[in-house]
Image 1 (cartoon, rainbow, N blue to C red):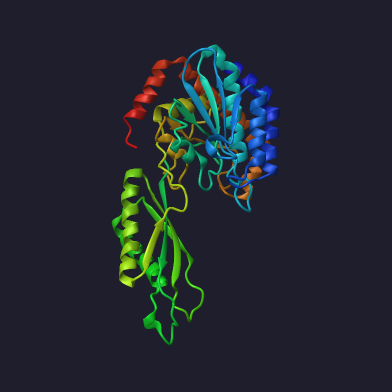
Image 2 (image 1 turned 90 degrees about the horizontal axis):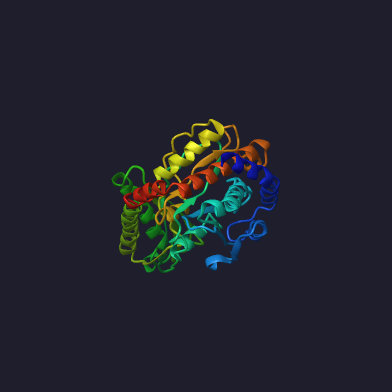
Length: 388
């Protein structure tokens, strides 16, 4: 089966290279990925997938499905294709999406023989308010047995964790007054915002050491001689677990509530972006993928990094067994993500070769799961008994 998979990948490679290059040359921000979406769906339609565009109400999202002739598990790959402002594909999503679509096409050509269903989800806007959140909220992953995505990076790293993220916005409403001649008639909304920051800073001593709270003042007043009657601040609250992060979020909100009470301001609390749940890697599934990478390349994947960022794949991992490993496209650990150097690395010959290896590992992982019901049982047992 391994040789068959590799031969199929070699046949498909020219089209995959073209797909990745065209998206690289036409970077689009989240929810504006019209070119990328069309390129992916056109290729999937060519290879016989049933493609649903404008999926789950997301204009640049899609779902491509092929159901095999025999029953079996539902295997899904998640394709990202949004770019970064001013940098282009500095996170390598032109290549990431190509890997997922490529893996789906290869598995589709085998699945009639072994059974099962393959789905490629087109998931826009990972860099901002990711569409995976919408899909999960709309129960689109409820019938999925396995979800996988592999991310370009500067080395091979096993799937690990990410931080749960809660965005929160505080708007304070005070009363304007002349800051010199009649300050007693004003209610200072900027004082409330500053007090919120001070209270959060005092709270830092008493939160988990691996949690993060960071924010900015987007509107702090218009003139130094006018008591500010309005301010707007935005924060990210991050923790290693969803449960603790919700507790911490409430404490952060109380900092703002206290500031409003102290200054006499009115307070409005809103969520300005999607929240991201923490990524819970299925270790059984991760081991299978890591073993496939070693079989194909001789590379021993590095231990997972401790989660410092946040991913919308975290939402998916809360509802079905999920992995989010990283594969090397740079051969240089000094090249950082979210840079032009990383974007340019996606179109090198080395990156194209690692793309093929990663597609093969994703497909062979799926084949093992489909052909070995006991393995799928072990994966699901772990999922059902893991604290989220």
